[in-house]
Picture 1 (cartoon, rainbow, N blue to C red):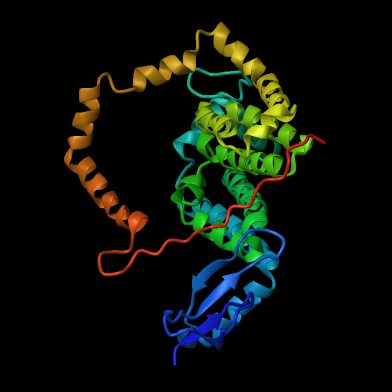
Picture 2: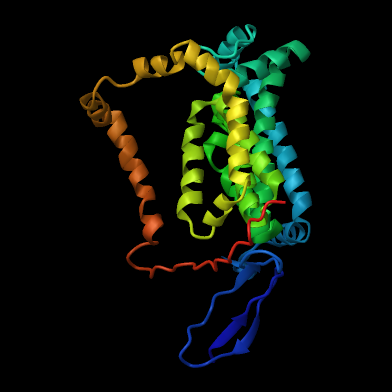
Length: 341
């Protein structure tokens, strides 16, 4: 007899319930729910084939996701601070460059914004040991994880937020390339903070979140000019999204913009006075023509790289021709009014 599995919000076996003959049997599953926020997310599971220690670990994580998240942060911080300190024969070039430029304490340099170099110089003056530079990089990564945890927790609950952070940790930008502290690494917590503040400002409409957004965007410019890739979509979302557009009738977005420009102002003045020197540097390193880009892509090593990465495309559209595509529809809840507090 075909049975229907009643979804539960706790780990364990689902309880069967009779269903009509026209329905398909469901697979055993685990659902992560949070009654006060967001829809439930289903994760296929086969409890009968899990080893006993693994089942116990999953149960502990489900009962205490906050403690599991704290343990993950501590483990990540220790491992990725110790590995480069033990295995690298000398400091990476980015850190050597930071030690060279940071001692000048300039408002700008001919290559990149100064914030990461200032931080490296500050750590050098306070600690002066190579391990401290690797720890600085991992502190930035851990801060990014913590902010992503807060953002995801409002959408999918504590366990779902932990899963989101673990997926994020699978990107090499958060472990292998983050061993050396540079402009890319310092961007991670700032971008995460901007996303958290933007989401919270639209949902709650509090002025404090708009102020936090302006600070995050403003400081991010001191980290890397690439922040425009983040700021532009946020502005377009405010203009184009029907539920977010009412926020433009409040003072929040304009205060965020004014605060961001105020924080950016010293460096923007430096750029004007120095003829936008970093952009001239980037232009000099860019490909001279479109044909140069095409020739670079056609090199044997490069086209093999793209061919290998093309294997990642099928999962975006389905799991294959032999399995039916399944789409997960997420219920979209209306945003609260964005009245500034």
